[in-house]
Image 1 (cartoon, rainbow, N blue to C red):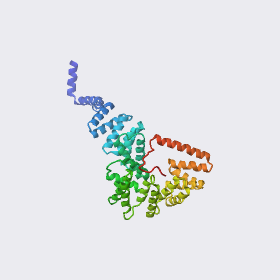
Image 2: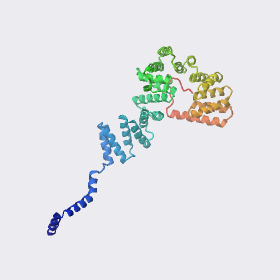
Image 3: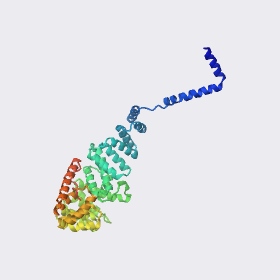
Image 4: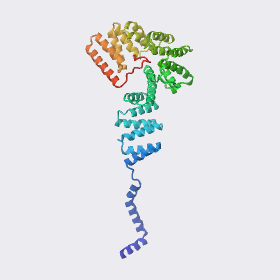
Length: 396
């Protein structure tokens, strides 16, 4: 005790000693103090708090907590899914796209995540990837609920229009043929596909919307098998001044599966309005090709290529017309060009198999036939083959 009292009196009488001891103690205890004040939450704690915030609909806090948890465990699939879906719900489409991409790295065949990423890509104007994701999601069963299917089919059709696959877009819009009361935006979108304009509905000028809504309404009446209403609506469209480009083509395209003779009339009327309409020439070539009449198809096929040599369907019908009218060697040149442009087009490979056989290229013909079988099986497996007779079957 005497030693302690002497040390205390010495400490009280020497301020410099007190300062030195304080500094030593501060330096010694600082790491422990910092550790106690900033000890990070565990992953499980952050995950639980994120789930609680999510359940309470506190989306900003839930997003922040999911992000913190994922910094500790980037291999947490549920975290990426919840983060992406919450970011999508709040309109943060780029962030949601990236989070869902992380999730898909861990779960590549998750149809809901593919569908949501596709919708995010649509909002960020990444139209090619969006279409790919949505179609893959549909093939994997993402449309398991009627409302989900409507959303995905509608966006698929919008995207097909946007990338110029107008006939495919019309087939997608056929899904809505049973809607009792289509809204104007659907009719506008359908009209854009029918009149072959690669725009989205929100890109159409106000003074042009009426034309597309009228075209969409006429096509919609046809798709729901109200022939009289469709005819009357198309006639009103034809009576417009100046003439509406592709209006007769649209009606002809819709007609040709059930009334090819009347379809021919409409395609020829389209050419009166627009003599350089390569798509109408393609259809006038395609109809006789379905009867294996290459000679009748050949003039229209040549004109289609002359009007638009970049059009794959024009190259296809000319290749088939040449092959089936006695010049398979020349026909193969056009068919092989088409294959370079559309390697997944079953019609091209069928035509090549037939043309190769005619010139004695047996191995090439055999390869093409086997490829056709594989493509058909794959399409059926992915449920990509449809039987909606309200709209025409596949054409070139």
